[in-house]
Image: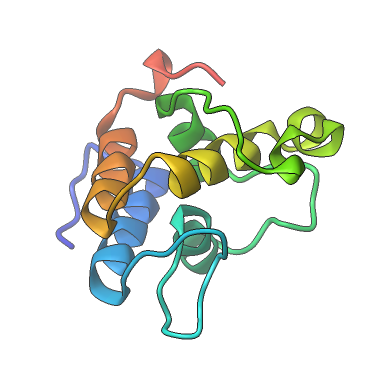
Length: 124
């Protein structure tokens, strides 16, 4: 990945997560599977550091979630008050990854889109 001076550190990390998905593969319903494939959250975790045990998400996850549509979950976990009320960013990314996204290419492209989007235009 070539560094671009107009991108901030968070954007560079998002691009690195996109590269990781392309290199190692993409999966659904688990952050990292036995083959080393990752979902969007798993790729962000590995690049930026995990946040799954805290009540707030890191900046890269917030920026990515701002680019995604709200998807109705197909699981009871996604519909629970805990996920919707406490971790909406994680819920939004997981549902898009699991039920809308179809490939590593599509997941990586969404990360790149969020990395290059002007931060001031993103609503959290």
